[in-house]
Length: 220
Ligand code: B1M
Image (cartoon, rainbow, N blue to C red; front, side):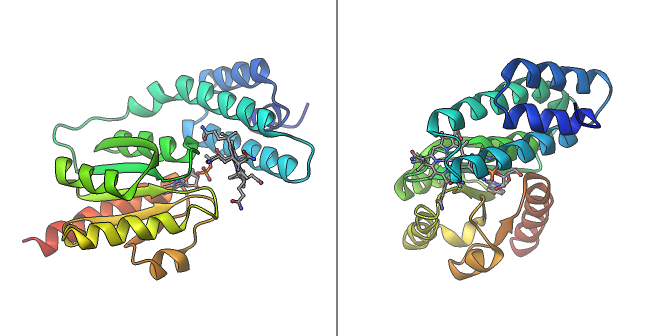
């Protein structure tokens, strides 16, 4: 047993021990740990899972088990995250999705949940979303922000295709674009013409608040 419950949560996810991980998440909530700290532990556990997969110790089936543990944990944590949401009018509308060819959604879901908890209205398009679908969603929902997630180096380029599609349809000037995901960098975001890069969910929320403020100023 390691020194504290947050380390134990990371380890039990890394070791694919669903029962133990969920028990510990419930225990941590009961002991008053902040949901965000528990989520960070789960993310640390996921990092280890990724390393074990890369080294050949784990297989895709193990990644799926790890994802289930993460998702079940989020089901426990979500009510505590959303509880803090006390607002009347949403502070902005975000259309979010994982780009075409990519089905990783844990990080994207986390960002969506935290945005909702911070008072944003979020339209989550899901995974494997083509540029055309992003364009249609922007036309339909008229969001302030388009958020894209990519976890594969091979699908990062599809973020650029979404931005190009928005430009071609004359929609780019109406929205701010934020991108994120493990392989994404600030430099890449600049290169493809995104407005911002969110390194993690917490940072992404602050950035989205600033982007909405900027948008309101320019539209005055
Ligand atoms: Co995948 N996978 N996977 N996988 N998987 C990675 C990404 C990989 C790095 C593993 C590895 O080799 N170490 C590797 C990619 C290598 C590369 O591209 N260079 C990989 C691979 C190869 C694959 C497959 C090709 C495997 C195969 O089939 N042979 C396949 C591809 C499927 C596809 O998408 N077409 C695949 C499949 C899967 C599963 C389905 C089994 C599962 C995903 C289940 C799901 O999401 N529902 C899975 C998993 C679990 C992973 C790892 C282990 C964990 C990802 C994760 O959920 N992390 C991952 C290894 C890794 O990332 N180190 C890996 C936890 C999550 C909270 O973090 O998503 O980074 P993350 O989100 C963070 C930030 O990035 C940021 O905030 C979040 C919270 O702080 N963020 C944003 C994310 N989106 C944002 C958006 C924003 C702002 C911030 O604004 C809009």
